[in-house]
Image (cartoon, rainbow, N blue to C red; front, side):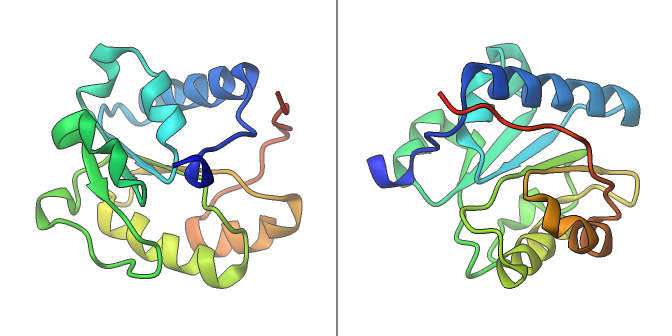
Length: 149
């Protein structure tokens, strides 16, 4: 479904975010990653890296990746399989909209998926959301500008 594609992810952006994912896992000594609305990052990882990962997305055509795919609708942030709750060392999030109300829903889901308080979050958003990201995830901004293909 072309309406669900992430067209703005250039190869540089994908490589940078995948490297950030690997670095974050090394920092928290983890291995399990939940990709919320970021299927292009999930599929850009090496196949051996994807074994410990799951992609949560609205696009049901992604079901072809087997047990690694979970249907996700941010409008229902608590509709997460029980077997996924508390299982992830890192949650990577790139929502389709960057409003506070949407981010609050993603935060609910992320907190359900996180293994514990040591889990990390990588969230892509605009500079104007820095205060919101700190409030929701205790994240601090990193200067990175995605490139557009």
